[in-house]
Image 1 (spheres, rainbow, N blue to C red):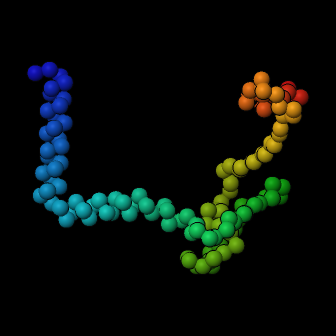
Image 2 (image 1 turned 120 degrees about the horizontal axis):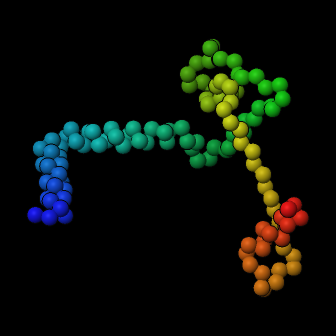
Length: 123
């Protein structure tokens, strides 16, 4: 018996045993599968619903101090701070937009030239 045949036999036996387990205990398997799906979908509860606008929250760079612990805030009530805004920051996001165009556009230019031409002065 070659290695490939033995591997096929082991895989076949594993699928057979799994099918036998599922057929022997259908209710617990269905409940376990449902719990796994719910556990995987739990982070989706924090997503904003359609129709709610984006919320912008920013902090000053100079004179920054970590937010105070809001001990009198009750769970489920809206507050001024987002839920994730606790403690000192670990990173910040910087967003830069660059809009450019190449004029005049000749037929022999490549798409890469759109980036090279405006940025050539910077380098």
